[in-house]
Image (cartoon, rainbow, N blue to C red; front, side, top):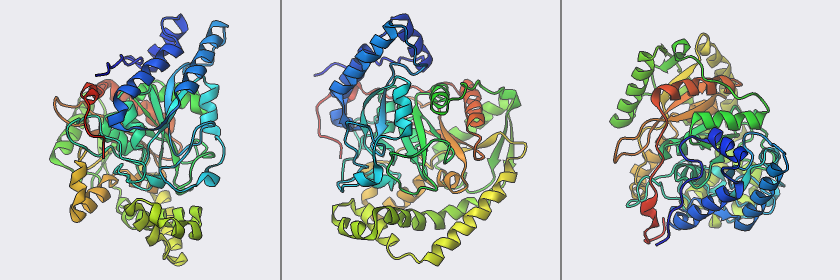
Length: 469
């Protein structure tokens, strides 16, 4: 049986990694080799990675170490080993976007986001798995494989999607942090189900060149990290802005939606959410009811707009010709997009525009909204085998996250403490468009009250068994 090396990031996060790296206590090569060893030891079962760049990662780490010894400092992420969602092009690595179809012409060369991380001195370990075309939030994919949620080694559970591999890789300690993308919850859902922090930036804050486009007007790049503190460091580097500090908990003014977001939530997740809100209130935060009548509009919008947008990107001919190679669920959604009339699409977009404008007033005097991130904890994969139950689960996964994309908000999943033997859950924080830095300040304040999450113990995955479904 292989041995599991210690996670180089430890429990102190990116700031402590930077301190040890600059002092010479830790080299980038040593950290990179440790993560590659952990990947080799457990990813044969977890299935988080689509592609692992062993040789390239080690060569890059050595070059970064040489720069440090020569007196060059590239910033707080220098030498940090990371993973990239397979939606984003990385020079020298294949990009599949979760599909067996050739879509390289739609992705192009390595884009601005990856280039920024390279300039910051990050070491790219490889590409993480994702749902085909990013069109799905359960994390299940019959084309490239479904990663296994690291919180249960005995039963395959939903990893969340579409940034499934990124969520699993961070939760399992297979990288220091990972990039994902979020069009309807694809960062926040896997973050919640795997017990890590996930940040969905406002659409347009980070460029999406070099990424497969699902819906250009909704797509946003996001981070999956160990904590809000780590996400604040990553966001600073990605945007070229100072690292934010926590807001004062006593100054926080949070809105609690009075409907929709707290409906159809499992008893466990609801109880843990209410306990978190009570803890924040006890620490001095003020929580007031807020009405968000626009939230249910997402139910009519996404089943139409996402398939249409995907067909528009693929082109009708390629979409129709490739149906037999697609995941059956994805193929069914693509077919639905082939028949949508322009008038229907325009009406949906007009309604969304009006709702985006109306909702801004509800943030007056409010630092953000707080809700459960998902309806429940990670369901068993086999629970989706029943068509009716599976449909309810699949649609419910994004019940609370899609309104954020629909209303053009920024958002984050803040993991809640996981009870012994339990599964992760998180609370969602949402802010108006462009308030990403303020949202991080709020998340940092909440994290100080609620505490840091404990990552999954993946030692059980060292045992040989059947590969994940």
